[in-house]
Length: 286
Ligand SMILES: NC(=O)c1ccc[n+]([C@@H]2O[C@H](COP(=O)([O-])OP(=O)(O)OC[C@H]3O[C@@H](n4cnc5c(N)ncnc54)[C@H](O)[C@@H]3O)[C@@H](O)[C@H]2O)c1
Image (cartoon, rainbow, N blue to C red):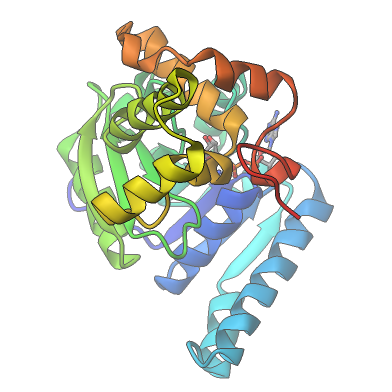
């Protein structure tokens, strides 16, 4: 397979990331088919996309005609079979390895044999999904950041099994989406999370040690490193449960003490203090 060009994109999952990916791929001019398990959530995704594009028209970032063209390129379905002719399928369902493995095995039965399968997983070994298929050379990670329409980075995660053509096609696809791709080996955390989470974890350790208050640690990193937000504000934004599961995955892979989640983080998750989404994290919201 040389010189694969991606024109038709299937997306599995209609959560935060699935919705963002549909917008990104449709804006890049691809035909997009989003598959959700339920018709109602598939329809809700289309309605949400319409509202997101409306806001961009109101702000003058998009004209009405382009809005219509983008929406016209996206269809939603509850049938996996609708993805049969896709050139690329991006899996973005719940972060659960058995669920993702089963889905890759099912995709193999349904989607044309030349298609590339990508996963948006934040933590799992991509090779474990590749070997569920009969095309492990056509499987890669494609790790977008939240919110996908705004964040420019895409990590192309290359498992041992992937071919050069697959990586080249995904790089070209990411560039056509106006993203900045980087290619990274199939290791837990890839580049960004592997570097970011020890920092976040050590910020909580510093709070536990009484080095400074969380407000002062946040202020120090904003003012001293020019970061747009400090570590505690960022942990609350990402979600403390998500942060804990990323640290656990990193620790399981590398056994590096910097990845061992500090007790405060684990206790806060147990208490349901998950950050912005629960109204209470290191800070209180709402
Ligand atoms: N949220 C982020 O900041 C972020 C960033 C980068 C990557 N990711 C990754 O993207 C993926 C999706 O995350 P999200 O934040 O959109 O999650 P989400 O909870 O918003 O959406 C999850 C989707 O998975 C579907 N789903 C749940 N159980 C399923 C099952 N058994 N079979 C099929 N579908 C199922 C849900 O219906 C929903 O559409 C995950 O792998 C996550 O690690 C998330």
